[in-house]
Image (cartoon, rainbow, N blue to C red; front, top):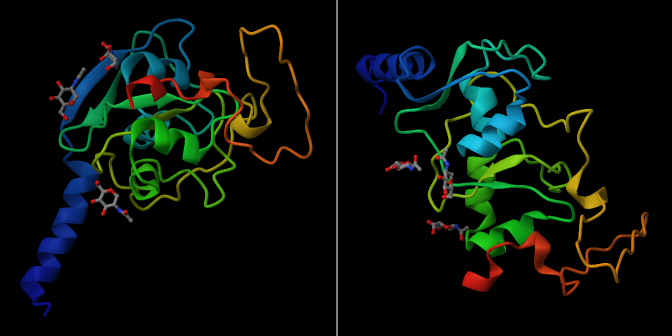
Length: 190
Ligand SMILES: *[C@@H]1O[C@H](CO)[C@@H](O)[C@H](O)[C@H]1NC(C)=O
Ligand SMILES: *[C@@H]1O[C@H](CO)[C@@H](O)[C@H](O)[C@H]1NC(C)=O
Ligand SMILES: *[C@@H]1O[C@H](CO)[C@@H](O)[C@H](O)[C@H]1NC(C)=O
């Protein structure tokens, strides 16, 4: 049952999760940086970078200020096991490649929509095998694909093989296995 004390503790804990986070990693912005570029290089998910910097970096990430320092993760809620989405990736291909279930993928990347049709090329996902990402907090999670990005499903694979450059749009019923494992970088290890 909920006592006044428990309620107060819950309120305090919510308050602390907003205010009293300790930064576990920092990064100093350089000229030409982009949010997803920083994320990919520093092993921070797109969601985590946005969430940790919700007060300073805008949702389009157009206000990065060179030589200012940002926080990359919060103590105890810092996912540093990441994967950069490439063309033709699906949630299934990502979970299979990292041997995680969709509960973990969605828990660590709450911006992914139910149909998983909003992951985009260059997006950085947390693929940890436990829930490590910071909770979404009070603000709604931005699920929109950036206007400059391409949805993974509709992107043409940047395959090095010259033989198959099949870019049939429209009816792309995700055959799952095209014999080209570019989109599953760690398959060999499984
Ligand atoms: C990011 O992760 C990769 C793979 O685990 C590792 O090799 C690399 O050193 C990491 N980079 C940073 C900046 O932590
Ligand atoms: C990743 O985070 C874990 C703690 O969650 C830490 O022990 C490890 O050193 C970190 N790895 C890198 C490359 O920062
Ligand atoms: C997903 O994986 C985690 C970690 O292995 C496990 O605790 C959880 O029960 C799994 N969830 C489902 C729905 O299988």
